[in-house]
Length: 405
Image 1 (tube, rainbow, N blue to C red):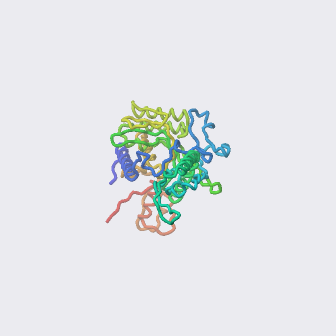
Image 2: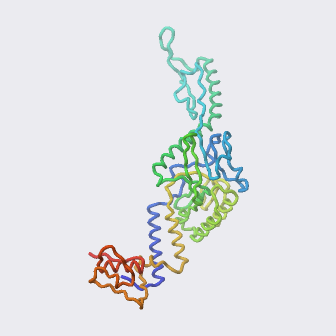
Image 3: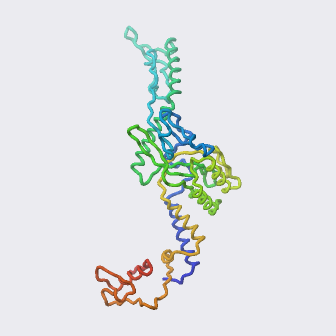
């Protein structure tokens, strides 16, 4: 049943509607509080330093941005575009040095792996010239012990030298797996670059999550082969969903910070300007908020924000929650509401009758376009109800009806 239009009733009903939609979205898409909930995380400080790896790092000054790029020694950095964040080419690590013949039969399986420790059997059965088998201890032969010690030293040097190459190969294989996963679920999953890690020991659970996020595109060049992670055209996001579940954070403060981010265009890989933005953000969150140049070690009862860029995989963000936040903020400030929303709420404002033309629709004519104030053209004969629907659509833009049994 339609009621008289009042701005207060209309605004309250529309606010209730969008509060419900926002709560429903949070139930269906819980806010991620910790990076541990993501299936893939790659901190920049964990990326191996190797000629096959190219990585962009933020610098202390944006004027030195060109110097903040680490390029492979075998390639020129000028070959890469400014939007390139990470490039990993498949490395070719050298195998472990072969053991001497004196200890080849004494080594336990797995000594070839770079992470494994080369161990020997303490004793083994050996056949004598008479065809009998006797138990022999490894230490019984001094020459064998010396040969093993020399080879272990040689193997340790190999481990130290080839560690970056092996880590680069492992990273390449991990990106290969991630690439296949995203190809299968391209509409669901995406990679993102994050920085400004919020570290907060809240009563309802610890928070460890970046507040600045920028989407990434993962490309594969099979002819090299190499993987490249590039920034997309999407602007930097402020992870506002994290603040909405914190009752101590003022929503107006979050809205103001988001406006500053849009105006300043701060990037997770930015320098002093991004650091200044994050320093001001944590001060607005709490009187005890602290900013750090690195990732804070411990959770404290007050917010801490540190610089520690990383790459992670998350469910693709549609911007639905952000749009709902913007609408609710708009409802608090705008004095006028769209008539379409008011009609959904059951509040209908009928326009003033036109004195120059009537709006009668005869029930007995199959097509009453000549009696309507609108020029309604139908391809088939229509009854009076269909003509009324067409008139309402022309006059109001929508039709509000009720279901009858």
